[in-house]
Length: 243
Image 1 (cartoon, one colour):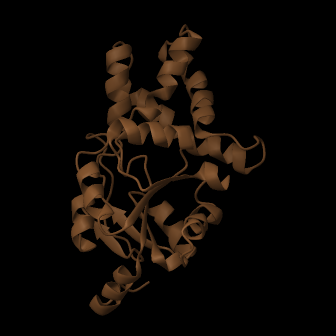
Image 2 (cartoon, rainbow, N blue to C red; image 1 turned 180 degrees about the vertical axis):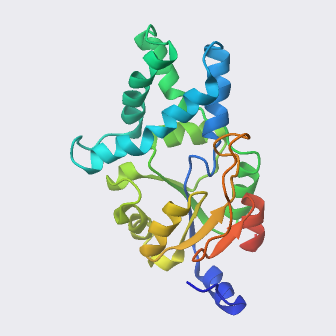
């Protein structure tokens, strides 16, 4: 897809009414948050490896739901399945049920990136802002409460019973707000998520999060064709959206 002309971009942004945000890695720092918690609770464990291994189980676990091997399962339960498989490899098979439950809920306690809250508050003045995450409603609500994320609405794959990149998740946002798909913009740090949203007719904004997997494993955040916007952070997004 060719880049939008300046006038076409202005028209596109003028028609946008809802900004829907991916959460893990885009709005919150899952890797750094899990590392900090692991270092505090279990200092003998390689916190970086643990965080990466836990996250690596995310897509395979959702694939089990998509394939029908598992019925509809909330991310909290999928995180717990992954965690229970991981613990022996990291010398933590001895953890009690209470300790496992507490550790699994680290995903409710993830810290926002430094620019997220202030950037979202700027955007909220002009647009309706909501989450669009595979995280379940309780997780996203607890996270928002703790981190001060100022959502107008918390939307989740749980609402649509369809994990991204299922079209039902993206089109569901437009349906909730009674809008056309191109009046919704998905904002995310993951090109595959954005590509799936574009295929459903949504506008897309790529937000650079080079340190999503840690400062020693920087991501390639090069622009890719097709996105409506490519921005450095939430404040750059607010600037681009005229907020």
